[in-house]
Image 1 (cartoon, chains in turn red, brown):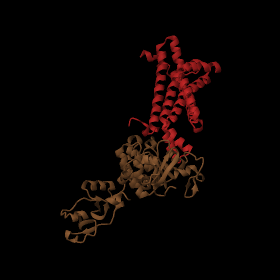
Image 2 (cartoon, chains in turn brown, blue):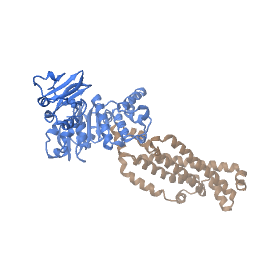
Image 3 (cartoon, one colour):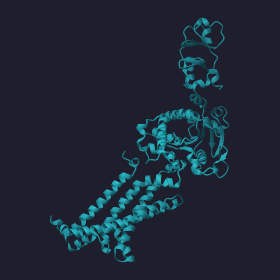
Length: 215
Length: 322
């Protein structure tokens, strides 16, 4: 039980760091989601179809940039602080959401569009009743991906003043203090797994059963 | 001119413009010249969305929305038109039964859970949902195996017999065209080669292209899809016994006393044949089946029966003249 000693003796502080972590994560992830889905839909509209592939390549490539690089880069421009951390997390989390939303919509069979149009659906009808519901599994995987990456990256963002559980972990690392490292690692892991499970449950609820291939 | 209440088939090799013609009708592709009119009104004067909602549209298998179950798929257009829930439910039930499927069995299923044939039936049901006058069908049975295709075509013809929709049907299968089409339009490289009643095209192909497309067995193909009753002749006499055949007035004598017993042809009577020929054909069987029976038995006449009663005879010499 030695390993948990730090966590229990500093319980209030751990809780406070966890909430802080959750706050940075949620704010930046929420912005990424809203703006990312919007961009994904915007870029796939009929008149902008020719830019869709470009957007897919750009987001595809930028996904492989290490998160630390993005954090460092944003730090150069904005200096230290929570806003810097949130901005970096927002930008980094944006990429998988745009990528997945766009590819989800692009991969819809062209026959589906033709029939939808042929039946007299307006562009709005097609977006809300056809495109979004069919792309929803892809959108959800973008959201989950982004959330997990975000929670992990938020830990690193503590080095530029983001706060959160990263503070405990990095302090623990520099003192070679195992119980202290644990006090950061355990809640951050629970957070990541919990958020992913929660989104998984939402996905199960809102994605049409007809789109699940295992039937 | 496309006839009301009839099936007009557009046929031709790939890239000949048949699908394009279809899409011009519901304005998925806009015309650059010419005009298309419904009841005298140019389709340009009708709102695109309204126009499409009033035309049923069926394409190959994949046209069902994968995220909607059968009920939701069929109710798309009624919902767009703002029907109330009860009316939609009744209509969906009616349509599923119309296409010969079990309502309770399929209504909650998603396209992925249906067989190819079932999907296609639901596709037809969906196109009929808002009771459109016009139905556009783009190779609807193209992706289905031959056996099920025949079944679906038969179901489709039975439905059409009841509903009498104006149907424009695209196919590249000449057999399907002959089977389903009241009229056939033959396309090649963007031009209309011939447009006429199915029988007229078979009898008088306009040029070599049409002849090649029809193939060598067009007449026989056609006869396969014509029901015996369509070609029945009345040159027969009903008799009850041999004694009644005194003066030879007819080429065919049918023995009938409350129930069909058999028949004799003029030649049989001359040759003093004593046992009756027992062959016959049902009114809804195809003429080709009749010809087959005639060949097997070397006869030129065959009684046509409906519910056990003789309604006429099929006459070999007149079949090819029709």
